[in-house]
Structure formats: structure tokens, C-alpha cells
Amino acid sequence: MPPVPSKSLPLAALLAAIPLAPALAHTGSGVAIGLQSGLLHPITGADHLVAMVAVGLWGAQLGAPAIWVLPITFPLVMAVGGLIGLAGVPLPFVEPVVALSGLALGLLIALHVRPPLWAAAVLVGVFAIFHGYAHGRELPGAADPTAYAVGFVVATGLLHLTGILIGVLVAWPAGARLVRVCGAAIGCVGLYFLLASVGVLS
Image 1 (cartoon, rainbow, N blue to C red):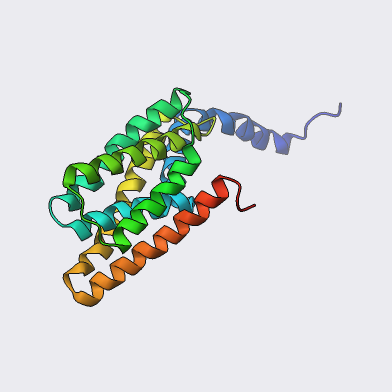
Image 2: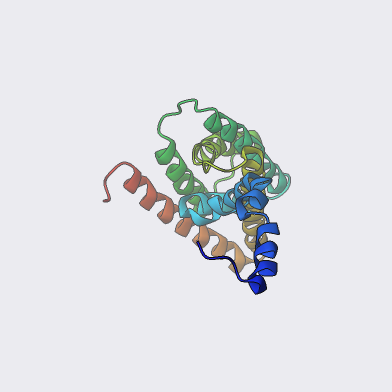
């Protein structure tokens, strides 16, 4: 092997002193992956997105105290569902129920259904279990579970807030009609995913 030219020695020494990239990226990489994946997961899935917007929309349509009870209930219960999913506990019919949540909540908004607060909270909580479970089961392999859970809970809260901001239009007659139209659109999206989940659509 020929000797290394003397002019190359400083460059070689500098390159040797630089740590390898994997060593730098190892610590904390799972947290970063988990947080990013958790934030993106509810937003990139249309079935999750419309249902979570619908929770805020329906809460705003129902008015106080539902406007804050429903958007708080959903992420809290969803976190429990996420833990169940992370633990690998089997739960049947996850995708159909996730799709059904969009259909049901959309219809409730479109028809301006006003159940008792406890009934609305229970319904939202049941759907939240399945949404959280779906998130938990899709944890990326290298991701930190805690950061991932924080990510999808924060993203869910922002989607609820989006629904609430649209829902405040119910204060005006035209806005109330627009909210019901949004509910009908959400219901159609939910119906599409429900049919796809049971194999009617391929």
C-alpha cells in the first residue's frame, strides 16, 4: 500500500475525529420518530381526521358544556385505547368501528341530534377507544411509545379545535346550515371507509 501523502494527513485526522452519524442519532431518535409519527398519524388518515373534526363540530353544535366535554373526553379515552393497542390486546372490528364513527357522528351533526350530555360523552368515548387502539397498534418499530402517544393526542386536540372553530358558525342561521352540510359530508366519508373496511369496495 503506498504511503499517504503528507498533505493529506491533516484531512485524514479531521475526518477521523468526526463521530459517526449513527452514534449522534442514536440517543433520542426514538423520541423524535415517535412524536413526529404520532402527530402525523391522525392527520394522514382521512377516516381518523373526519371523525376527530366531527367531535369538535358536534360539541360546538350542542353548545356548552358539550363544546368542551366532548373534545376533552375523546383524547383522554383515546389514550387508554392507545395503551391497549400498544399492549397488543386483541380488539375486534377496529377499522369498521373507526369508519362507523365518522358515519355516525356526521349523521348526528347533519340531523342536529341533541342527546343528553352523558349519552353523547359515552358514544364519543366508545369511538375514542377504537381510534386510540388503531393508533397504538401502528406504532413505528423505532419509535418511543410515550412520545408517539403524546403526538397523536396533541394532533387529535388540534383536530377537535378545528371542528369547534367551524362549529361556532351555528350562532348564525346560514352557519348552522353549513355545519349540518359539513356533518353530511363527514358522514359520506365515513360511509365510504365503512364499505371499504367490510370489503364492499375494493
